[in-house]
Image (cartoon, rainbow, N blue to C red; front, side, top):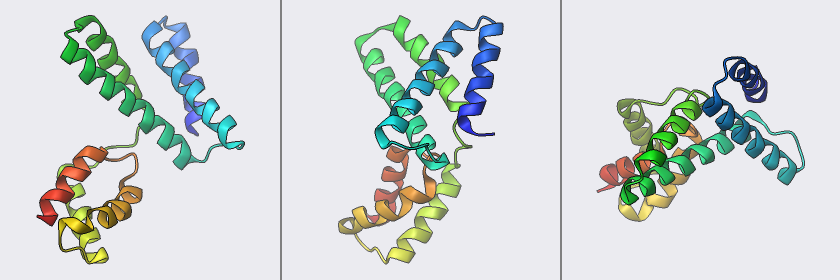
Length: 147
C-alpha cells in the first residue's frame, strides 16, 4: 500500500472517529505531497514521498524548538501531537548502534580520515539512511568518528 493510499484510508478513519488533530495533519501531508507532485510534474516515487514526509517532520521539530523557547505551551502540545502522528508514517528509525555501524562502514568505503572529508562522508551516508535517521544525529556521529 502506497503512502497516499494509507493516508486516504487513515483520513477516512479519522473522519469517522472525529479525530480533528489527526485529520488536520493527514490533510497537511497530503497537500504537501500533491504540491510536490505538481512541482515535479509527475507521480512521486516512494523515495520522493519519504523526502516530503521527512521535510514536514523536520519543520514540526524546528517549530517545536521555537515554541519551547518562546514558552508557548499551548503550541508545544499541539506540535508534539503533530510530530507523533507524522512519525506513524515514517519508516522504522535506526538505533544509534545501527547508525554507528553504517557510519563506520561508509567512512572506510570513502577512505575519510579527517573532518575535511565530512562532506564526502555525509554525501555517501544520507542516501543510505534516508528517512530512517535524523540528519543532525548522523552529522554529530560522523563528526565524532572523524575527530
